[in-house]
Amino acid sequence: MQTSCPKCQSENIYSDATLWNCLDCSHEWMSAEQAPQEQAGDTDNHVRDAYGNVLADGDAVTVIKDLKVKGSSSVVKVGTKVKAIRIVDGADGHNIACRIDGIGAMNLKSEFVKKA
Image 1 (cartoon, rainbow, N blue to C red):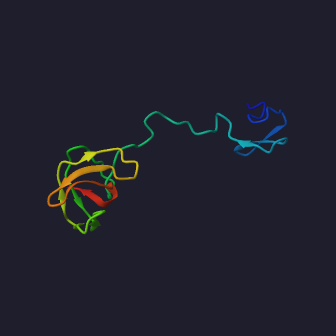
Image 2 (spheres, rainbow, N blue to C red):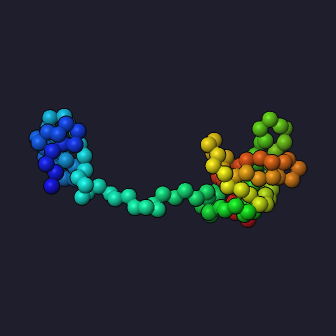
Image 3 (tube, one colour):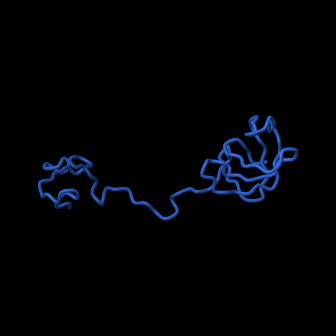
């Protein structure tokens, strides 16, 4: 059972259904028994395509939307097949590194491809 407020250490607290409340500082919190427990492995850090399939290095993907190539007048057309992708940690959301015939090396967002 909770005996003091975790914020101000006051013993002026009460339970209100699922939350504990402090009368002095108005802080609300869940007790340790009620708080959801995070388990190791709960986070899903897999790269997934537009349909939710997990992508891995070496997979082949197909582009599902016309994509303009930045800094060029080229366009990657719908249905373009890209072989041997590499999964990268792109800070700007581009998490697939690949080489496309006729265009060259580029990065793609996984939301615009489907696993082939």
